[in-house]
Image (tube, rainbow, N blue to C red):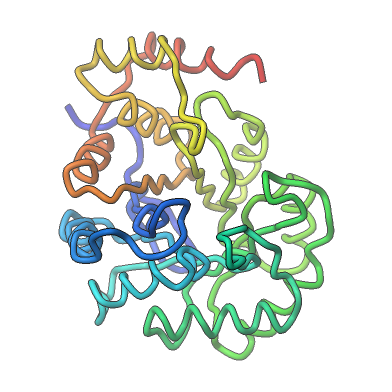
Amino acid sequence: MTANHPTTYRLGERTVNRLGYGAMQLAGPGVFGPPKDPAAARAVLQAAVAAGVNHIDTSDFYGPHVTNRLIREALHPYPDELLIVTKIGARRGADGAWLPAFGRDDLVAAVHDNLRNLGLETLEVVNLRAMFDVHGPAEGSLEGPLTVLAELREQGLVRHIGVSNVTPRQVEEARRIVPIACVQNHYNLVHRADDALIDTLAAAGIAYVPFFPLGGFSPLDSATLSGVASQLGATPMQVAIAWLLQRSPNILVIPGTSSVAHLHENLAAGQLVLPPEAVAALDAMGRSD
């Protein structure tokens, strides 16, 4: 049965498959340090591209430097159709802590680190991750760091700019300062705070990239989700991905995994059709938010 939703969407100047790949899990535990098996990590990246993935999400603060170097080792020279999206605005402490890195020097250094470690001359899309609160979106002006990114774009080091971990007010501010190619926020079946924002962005033709489709560090434990998955002969992760793809055509999903088998399971979700009664049951999971 063929999926009943669009399979591609515009991201910057490129059209990408809506099911991409997030590289965060290729780093060590806590997204810090190297993976136990670097060869296996490279194999996952190669399998993703071989399966048709043309949108990879990464950052040089994953590791730090680990996932970008793995991507370069596994895939460089990159296929023309492959779009690598990275993010800046944070750094890692010696203990693995996530720390803000919003100053001009921090941002310029981060762009150059990404370019060097990925082996690129220009970053196609760079997301600015807001770090006013490390645990989630919090209000604060993005004008200063976005101005720096706009200057780097004028220098030809960055082609398109996105924002991550942001509030709707910050998205509005960002769109007044620079053209915004995408918004990357926490969103899934039960974490639905961005419902209105997704619809606003869809009307403007701007991609929305949800992370933690199954809850992230606090995985969803839902009898409803498990029940729907069982009825459809699918995994809960496949159902969660399929729900996101059917939620809005501007949603690009970037599930991450360090396993080739799980990669193929995740990609198979692109062909999973959720019947109306399943969608209704899944939608109800987020109504208390």
